Length: 405
Image (cartoon, rainbow, N blue to C red; front, side):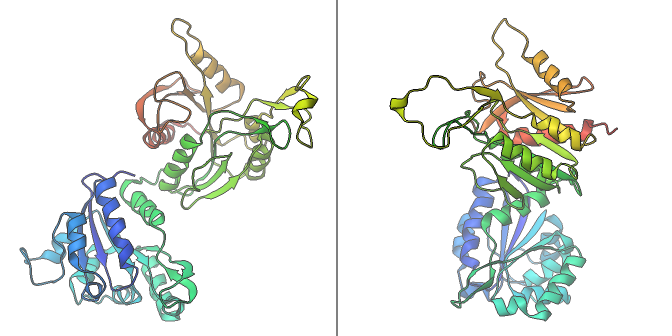
């Protein structure tokens, strides 16, 4: 996520989870380049002092409606200039006040002016959260267009276990990203993304695989989710955590990946086939570890299943974006032609050509440079950038140039 020069008002209310907001603020400013103004309620200042938030935000912390270097129409100006108003933690009290239009301090007044710019990350006692009054207030704010980040279940400050914990920082940041950077390109669309390698087992211990880490597929997953899609990630072995707000199915073999895709193919609008499916698999994997002293006379191999073909047999209308790994040797053109041939043979709409021979590209890197080719003859070259930026460019270009049948 990146939000340079985006203006965020971070509202802090009186809950024990406020200590997590210091780390959240630091990431918004240092990692993502946001310009953050912090507003603390009187109750918030009972838990933490403004100094730490001034240090991390590099801006004065606002605590009073009628005091400070600028008063005038401060509540209006703050809301009007903000790209996002994030309340984290958001207590039952601030939810109730907003739901009923009460504006009796600086933060509640800014929220009332800002309206649907506001996102509440809920954090409170389980009993407060479950109370029908609180639930009615939350439902009302949803209907009015306010953003709600639901609390998680876990150990609470009162030493009971229940729903009320502030959502994980990654979930809050994902919602900030969607609000600030999302365009709604894939709203109401069902997207399948595959990522990572597959492992084709020789015996229970040994397998054939490749160098894929899954980073490109996971980046596509995050961007698709940001753009409003209902995303299913089908991932081969990867050390990456499951993306926020996405259903993830973990598999190992190409056959398992095919089964997962086939089971979900009919409803898909898009398939991003970013996984590096291992092309070859043993014909008869051994059921026990092959002993070294027994020797390997030969490993009989077969081609792995054609997953895109299986998908197309079920769903001929979805937009399919494949990936091609081709090393283009100097003076030996042909990788582009091979990628186009693969696009046509597999009835894809687009194909992304990766060249792992380029420094900083393809397997294992946080960066990539790719060429996107379309069935209609379009060609787009994306220079070396983070895989997330490349994923953003791929999805934007596909959306702008996809011609539905």
